[in-house]
Length: 193
Image (cartoon, rainbow, N blue to C red; front, side, top):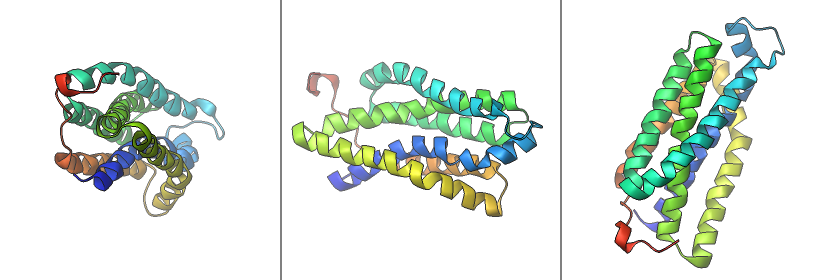
């Protein structure tokens, strides 16, 4: 993987997390209707809280695992949990199941989030590292602007669950792309923190 492709890859990985958060926002009304909630009910917001809780807790575990087992293996483990969580959310028969699925989905999303930072730190030094992280964060900021429109456009032709299927497919696509990802240097060759 060349430097440009690597930077595009890590930007896509961080964008995957933002997609899972923001693409579903236009679906709140339809989700309330599906689960028999009153219009304007704030209970549907628990799906976002659960996702953020999963990311926060997940990052605590993924960080040490990334250093011990390598970047690619942790990326794949996180993506598997991300995809399973997205599929479970799409198939959820109740709000409680959806909230639980979103929590596990968030746990999975924490993996790519941690791996992105580690990859950038492995590949770049000093000002180059700062520039690379700036580009990655620019994508992270751009995706929340675009994702709600994408979710709304998808709901024109499909039910709200299709947004979650889209995220699962995006996770599979990133996993296939990660085959080209070089493994990080061994622990003895890494730069000290």
